[in-house]
Each structure stands twice: as C-alpha cells, then as structure tokens.
Length: 387
Image 1 (cartoon, rainbow, N blue to C red):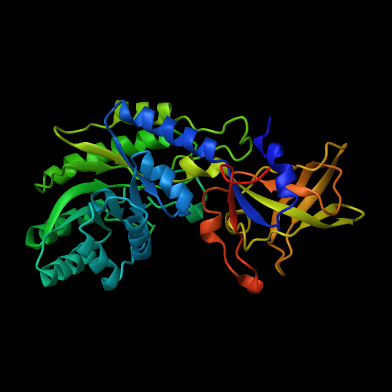
Image 2 (tube, rainbow, N blue to C red):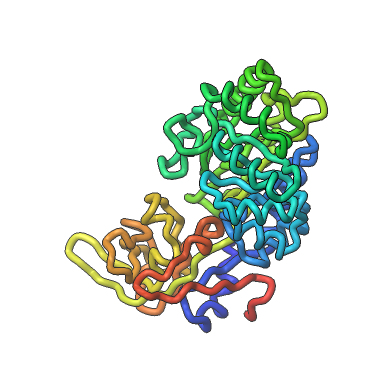
C-alpha cells in the first residue's frame, strides 16, 4: 500500500504545494546502505546537493555518514549541522578563494582539486594561512555513464577533473606544492546511473589510472568513487530502496585496493530520492478534443527536474479511485516546459484533488526557485505531521 494514502486527511488541510518526506523510509534506506558498505569497511560522504534539509541531514549524520559538499556554503552548513570536519569532502570546479579559505580554516578531510591550476591556488592560500592542507585530485576517467547529458561528468569533453594527458604536469605541481598533502584520488562519472556495469568499468579504469600514476610516484591513502547510483523513478513503491548490496559487492570485486587504502563513496540521490514527494492540488481540469490537462498548483519552480532533464516521475492521484482517464499534468508557470507528465493515467480527476509527484527527495527542494515571484515550497515530515 502506498504510504502516502495514510496521510491524505492531513494533506487536505495543508496549503499546497509542499514537500513530504517519509522519514521511516529514509532511515531504512540509510541503514541498508550502511550495512552493505560496512561489509567491506568503506566510508560514505552524503552529497548535500541532493537534499540539505536539517531533518534529512540529521538522519545521515546519525547513520555515521560524512558530508560531500560542492560549495563553500554547503561546507559551512554541514559543519553547522554537526558533521565532523574530518568527514567532509569539498569538491567543485569553481571554488572561490573565500570558499577555499573557509575549508582550510575548518581543516576538513580534504579539498578535491579539479585542475592543475587549482592545485597552485590551494597551495598558495594554504601557505598564506601558514598551514598544510590535505587534498585529493579528481581524475577524468573518460567513461560514458549512459545517463542524461546534463548529469554526465566523466567524459573527456566535460569540465570536471584532470585527464591522463595532464599527469606529468600534475606530478610536477604536486611535487612543488609544499603546503599540500595528497591523500586521495577521486572519480565521478555522472548521476542517475542504473546500468551497474558502468561502475565496473569505472573500477577497472581507476585501477589503470592508479598504475599510470605510480609511474609518476603518485600514491594515495584513499580512493573516492563518487556517487551516481540511480533509483527507480517509474516504480517507487516497488523499488523503494536501491540494490546497495549489489553495488558494493561489484566495487569489492573489481576495484584493486592497495595496501592500507580506504574506499569512499558519495551517495546522494540513492539515499533520499524515494522518501520525498511533491504534494500538489488540482486547480483546473481542461478537456480538449485531443487531450485533457490537469493544471496543478505546483510548478517547475518547485520541482525543476522534468523541465530541466525531461525527467519522468511517477504521478499519483490520492483523492479517489474512480475509473482512469488520460491527462497531461502541468503547472501554472508561464512556460510550456512547465509539465510534469504527458498522457498520464489517473483516476477521473477534478478540482481540489490531491496529486503526489513521487521520487522527489533528491534534487527537488534544493533546486526550487522563485521564478514568477512564487513562494518556495515548505516541507513536512512523516514523524511530525498531524493525521
């Protein structure tokens, strides 16, 4: 049974649109990830960019995860929410000096350098601070993750990471950087990857890159495989928790871990996507000759993924079980791209019905905006909502 139906009486009393989070599912998902990961002694840094809400971060912190951050504000937010600095990784291709100085001051686990020029910059800022900074280097493995082009990050033409043809220059930069200590290598090829052999290819490629880097006398204590494990957007109730066991078993089988190396991952979407839904109310039903429209009060300002990535989320009508009809589910924004789904089968729908847009816990609320001067959507949680 869809857990959301249990909360419909409460939903009907609340102003829509809003985000709703199933905290029991979130905790089960974090536990499943932790159990599968702990079999091999791996470590995880939760990716704040997926969802940075305080109750969500509390679950991740209590599960023992560190934090993966891609902005200076995310680093500060992680620290404010109790993540130990020694468990924080800071990535991003365009860190400002101010952001880097914050990371240096808080002595986080490592700053992930994504270019040879960044190595010079971080070394100079560390020297000015009179300290030595632990860094990792993000490598570009040139692997196609078979996902949407906007969330592909590991191809040679992408802006991320240091490519193998730069390894000679990289070695020279690191040797000259007296205020840096290289502790890790980092790779990340994309997001929403459901084809597990991609991760096998990534492990094998990292094995080759490590061998190549040894020729330059570059060896590290930590390997960071990034994140990217995808979820089932089509059937969130059938697959609420991803196959963490299969994922970590594959890494253990194909990644060659050197003596005294620790393996790190950065899950985000796979931990939080399925626990979140956008709850919205039907404003109008427009019946046409060729198609029918359900106009809801949520828009692309509340959930951008369908407009930005052509993402398809499961859409459920929670108010009735009437015979089904076919609808395009659209929002109120003055953009034709403000559409959540086309030709969707829903029970016969009318003004005031409650609609749930599923699998919105990742890259939903963090990407919300105020285009058209709309209000930002609030959040409600299953453990503190009145039924």
